[in-house]
Length: 215
Image (cartoon, rainbow, N blue to C red; front, side, top):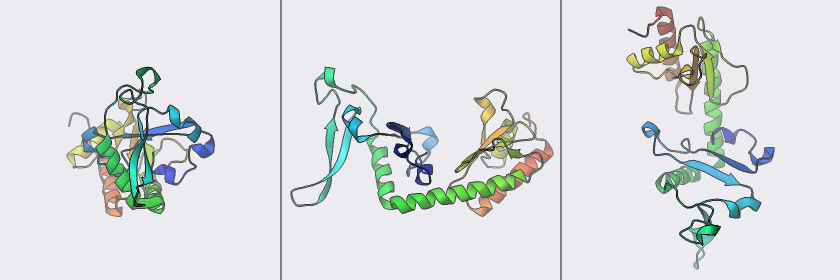
C-alpha cells in the first residue's frame, strides 16, 4: 500500500533490493477494477536491469524542468538479446494521473492522508468491537485495513449491506476456506464520522436480525 508507506519505514530502509505494489491509491479511481497501474522500484545499482522504460527529470537548454526517457531497455530500442523486456501493456495515462496526484500532494500531503486513514481505521475498529458478536480477527497492528470476526457469515452481511445501499466490506471466506466469519473493512481519509456510524448501525441491524442469504 503506497499510502501506508508514508507512515512506515521504506522498503529500502528494511533491506529490500526490489519493491513493487498496487498504485491505485495514488489518485486513481477504482473504475470497477481497472485500468490501474503498479509501481516498481529497485536500488540504484540495479537500475540498468529494470524492464521497460525509465523516465527521469532533467533540464532543457533553457534551464526548464522536463521529463525524458532516460533508460529504454525494451527490444524496440536495443538488440533483442540484450533487452530486459519484450512486451507489456501501456498504463501511461494512469501513470501520468498518479504522477500529478503525488506532485500535488507532496510528501507531507501523502503522510496526512495516511495518518487520517489510520486514525479513522482505529476508531472504526473500536466501534465495531462494541457490537455484540463482533471482534478483531487478528491482533496485529494495521494501518487502514483490518479484519473483523462476525457473528453470522460475512457474505450474508455483505449481501444485506448491498440491499441497504452500502458496501460493508469484503467477505474473506470467498478466497480463504474456513474464514466465513471474517469481514475485511477499510477506511480512507474521505470517510466521515457519519459514514462510519452508518456502517456500524447497518451491521448492528443485519447481525441482530440474523439476515439470511436467501432473503
